[in-house]
Image (cartoon, rainbow, N blue to C red; front, side):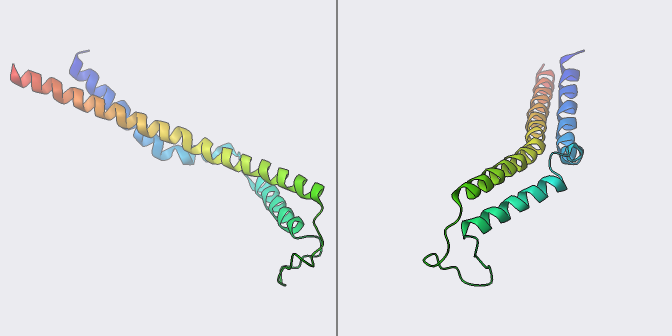
Amino acid sequence: MNKANACVVVTAVGLVLILASQFWPKMAAARGDWGEEQAAEYTTAAHDVHRLSYGPDHDDSKPHNPATAEQPDAAKLAAARERLDAAKATLNHARSWRSGPQMWFKWTGIAATLCGAIGYMALRGQAAGE
């Protein structure tokens, strides 16, 4: 394989990687790291943290007065915050799992396409100059 053909192949591989980066979120969505069960746990934990932060007698329809409110149970609040933090970590992992490879495909494809195209043009320039 001559150098010009190698540059064309590298350019084609780069274009395929760029195309794959566009379809990766749809392909990765089937993995199921984040579903209805995880969303329900996240929602429950967030509601528990909210409810426990304001005390057991808190009513969302009335203004909150910290001076007269009963103090929240620190142990229950800490447990609810831990559950919420774990749910947030799961959500962040699901988000990054989809975007990490997508960015790798995209930037590797761009680099390969540019290297192949520049190499091909340089070889054509050398051939024209001879």
